[in-house]
Image (cartoon, rainbow over all chains, first blue to last red; front, side, top):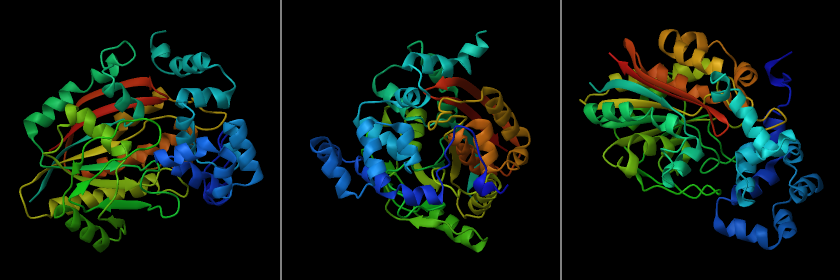
Length: 120
Length: 279
């Protein structure tokens, strides 16, 4: 197996083909750096998605706040983080959404690999 | 000749900046993390470096996917931070540097590294959180910063071995610069974490400690990992170790670890801190 197509469980590598696929979605999320972009999205989500040319799959994942769906549709976590921020979610909330855990369980999982572990 | 006096590795998690803005340093969640920093601040105060070379990655503030450098170096007199979209407060302008940075750019290209050279870039939390940690209260204006940006967001990314060699080339460039400047080098980001996918939340504290040990005693062992190895062992964003390797490459003398701290989790991440003298 080459480095390029190595499978890592539970992980979607954000590589060239994914970046091609996700370009409109990531470009929209990049626009959320500005307050104007965030406000325009909130005012009319569908129209804003169309402005950037999102595919039906990407629009559906945006509408459903489906983080794993957004990743599969070519979203980069660094740009999806800006979308999450617009929604008022932090990276623990996003982790919980992706793993199907509650936010408290997700935080406990993080802790179990670090401070929780060393504290016995 | 300009002289690299040491290196500092530090996390650059946005939540750290937010915690500092809200004055949460002494709360139970944060106190062990922030307790690591006073010895580093003291060392910086004693040493008074003139210039800080900061290895960081841009998380989508300046370098979008449309034009994304693999390696980039700033040669600007000033850098600005800006809104990143999710609520971290922006910090005042960062002082840049235009003489050593152009010399580094020339030397890099002479020695077969070809970075993108930037005269006007916004810098994101990857660079600003470390400055806020080292010089709280935004008291970093006296230090001239040379940003060095490594692509850690989209594959293909530069290999760990290449990032280390890139750092070595920068280290040699500094040493050949006629001047008496004292230079400190920051390796920011990391350590283990994964933000995306069903495996989100994975981190590997044992590996992080091993990285911190090897960074001192045997950095070349770390350069034998591929980026995919790092993703498997340390999570999808574990590739940020590459910034630490770039920093370590710059330290061409005898190194001595003066201080370290490690706390996991901070946000979703294993947060490491090391202060390394370069004799």
